Length: 239
Image 1: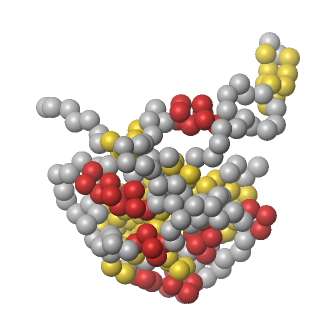
Image 2 (image 1 turned 45 degrees about the vertical axis):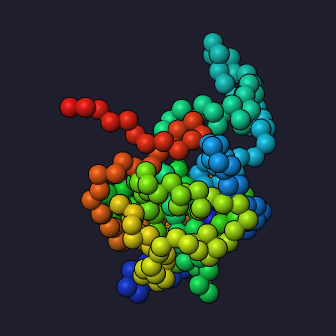
């Protein structure tokens, strides 16, 4: 069952002023992401570490064969499920956030998509076990940077194990944006806004962002991609 952890209601000036956690039992363990070793494919997906393989579901599923319902369990584990999903290439984003007290988050995420054009909304997914989870739950503003091929070092830095958001931002050129959210000015495309609903589903949280700022920096450099556990770049087709 999915749970809505928070729903923002616009306050004065359109900014959210109400934050209610509806499911306190879904607070995360503060585990760190693991930084990939040189030459090794990054061991994260959705900005998160890969747990040990386990059965993909703990409850049997009800299916119908020939009109007769029967119970069955999946014949695969989480590692097999991850490998299958890894055949779908994705982009790579660097997510930054600012929370009350100036707390910062910086993490690498590849589970990102647009949701709505009007109003402009995007979402990304984050494991409940991520070390960035507590800050994202309290975030006042979030920025999503769509990385280019020459920003792989940023992607790896933001996936480094054992570092806080502030430490991950050290050595990375950034400037404070609205509300103090870190912005990476060399990124070709940036979307920023206030967090909206946060929905838990399984071991992840789905975080929606109401976008009120976009930045596009024209560049001939291809986007950074993630495919079968490794960074790559999209193939180009000659015209």
